[in-house]
Amino acid sequence: MGTLQFHMDADAPKTTFVHYWEKCVGSCHGYTALREDYRKQLEKAAGDIGFQYVRFHGILNDDMCVVQENRPGEYTYNFFNIDNIFDFLLRIGMKPFMEIGFMPTPFASGEQTCFHYKGNVTVPKDYQAWDSFIAEMMRHFICRYGLAEVRQWYFEVWNEPNLKFFFAGDQKDYFTLYEHTARAIKSVDTGLQVGGPATAINAWIPELIDYCTQNGVPLDFISTHHYPTDDPLWNSGMSLEAFFADIEKKAKEGHSEEIHKQATVYRRGILKEMTERARKDAGDYPLYYTEWNTSASLPDDVHDYPYSAALVTKTVIDNIGLVDAYSFWTFTDIFEEHAQHCGEFHGGFGLQTVHGIPKPAYRAFELLHRMGSERYPAMEEQGNVGMLAASGRDGGLCVLAYNQQIPDQPAGKETVELQIDNCSVTCAEIFRIDEEHGNARKLWDNMGCPEYPDADQMGRLYQASVLGREELAIRKTETGIKVEFEIPEYGVALIQLK
Image (cartoon, rainbow, N blue to C red; front, side):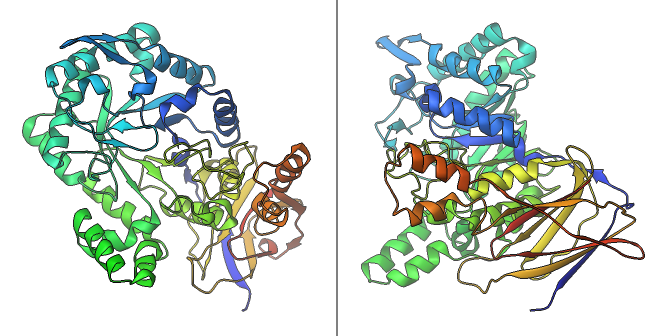
């Protein structure tokens, strides 16, 4: 293929560049936040990438020991473990994005649970008891941390209630749970921020807004989730139940290839399409995606390879101006939803392996973080390659480029030529993520996939995860400068000019 030519003007008017993807990051259930290794990895990610809030399931699970029933209808609350976690977050400069769930067993109306850690997903058996508990928990937070601090937190009601796996009720049951929880929170202080519906696949947004408007229920923000592999369901027009019933039917008929396609194939740019619709549905409410990743499957090797770095970069650039927070799920493979998986690299959701080896997607967020608070006018994609120019966090000018394609579609190395008018710098560096750079998974594969790497292997893996860095030649032109570089398939590159 020929050279792709991009053009920008260093004197063009810049606009504010909000790092919305740094607002929040996801993690496994709350109890894991009591672990030392979890804390070290979160602190590192916050420092390298700039994450401000963290969200996790199960802050009210039984393993957190929050509620005990002494005798029928008489409860004792214990916020010690929650305090321990929140104290840590504040100590490292972060804050909680508190997903309220799952249901403490003493309050639960049933026995249905989810995941290895058995989070109860039923509604309260006694809403008066639930309301009292929620209000008391808010009062406790305000007493311990101060009203001004707690008003900066976010309280999100439940997780993916449109999936039977996560919620034993229907939409009406969720709206009832949301109303009780939101009113209980606001009864303590109207300045506390509460929202939902925290749904999978961008669902229930207009319905929740309508319910809250018609019934005078507090609603401060909209939250939802999506993955690119939601595409077949999102476009099918089916209900979730009908979609999975169709999958089950095809499985019984032996159509495994069709099932695989239905569960994994998606269109390039689908996450932007989903976000645009959610933005429209949310209206004037802040829109927070509190869960997303490059694949919803676990394990899925795409999480460990440069493929995810390229998709992360394109998606973050695509969604500028559409979303107020975009919380990647998750920052680490310390992750116990289906028990802790074996192997340093096992296709987990995390940006870091269980021992903290940064994956290519981690490095992509690191490059995004190096960009400053102002951006230049958008440059149109050419083929699979796109780029964004912005001020540098440490001064100068940054250009972030990606070569992104979806699975099973043509992809290859591209040569890129960038003309920058009204620029006279003489020094440029390029930082790379691709098959040969910032890709520790490749080395691990070449090692024979050791399940328990020794100290020497761990050192080599960490070194392999480091960004590629080299000098980039600059050519002067009549109107400014020109740089030329190659970007492999699924590659990401940051050019820094100072």
